[in-house]
Image: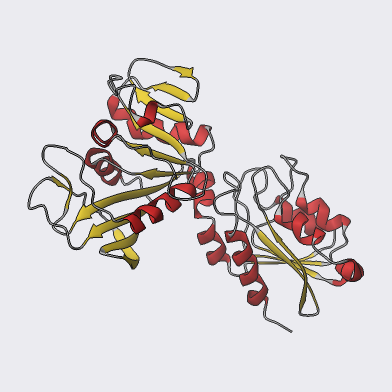
Amino acid sequence: MFPHHIFMKRCLQLAEIGLADVAPNPMVGAVLVHEGRIIGEGYHKKFGQAHAEVNCINSVKEEDAGLIVHSTLYVSLEPCNHHGKTPPCSDLIIDNKIPSVVIACKDPFSKVDGTGIQKLKQAGVDVLFGILEEEAKELNRRFFTFHLHQRPYVILKWAQTADGFIGTSDRKPLKITNDLTDTIVHKWRSEEASIIVGNQTAVSDNPSLTTRHWPGKNPVRIFVDWDLRLPSTHHLLDGSVPTVIINQHQHHHDGNNLFFQIPQKEDLIAALMKLCFVNEWNSIIVEGGSVLLKSFIEKGIWDEARVIVNTSMNTLSGLSAPELKNNRLLFKQQSGNDSVSYYRRAD
């Protein structure tokens, strides 16, 4: 008999394939096992489409169909018990007479939150819970943060020189990262729901905040422009991607652009967190500038930070990089002359 964690590990591997495509839903993987042999497997591929359990059962070959009623279903998240864009997976399991289910962790979504497990047990299904639970929660950290804290998972990102500066004193654009790192950054963007920069970065750098160097979806672009001074010729106002312009004066839609009014500047982060929650943007990358990044750090509203250091570039003066507080280093990777460090909040 294979240990349960072997099959659950496979569930997590499958689930992760959906990283860039299933939000705001969680990533979920499922495998169906008969006497130590996987006879079906699947994962949630795209938001609004079939869940992992459906794809798993549908993958069973015709010659193995009769084994379903004698098999164990492994799934990385509690099967849903409500009608959303798809029917409840708990009903699917019961209808297919699957006798036992092994689950990594409960679903924190209020419409599920234990009711899927309860329904399976009431129907006589043998349920084992908690296999690779922490690994499953880590995989879906965006989803868990969103539902447990009613805000998006916040990722801080910046690039700095070897001597600790993110820009020049005259605020002219400074290219710090190399082309390989740029590709990595665009991959990061494709994996998150939204991205934000402050006013000075929007004006000085004229960023696009798209995934043009990676074949993935664009995040919703957000930028701060309190007095609506960004030139209409800048990329962020080109209408190519859904974009939110945070300002003090207007609240209206203009094509792909939403002018979102916040009366008081000091309420920016709280209003931003609410905006993301209401729109089900379960993650956000804060790409700068320095003032905005430091605001998130000072308020302690961040979950992860990705800091790129060009180890061969020194400017001797300029805009100082932010300093993280209460952090722990997860790991580092090298990208040419760029060193990329991944941090998590320690508290």
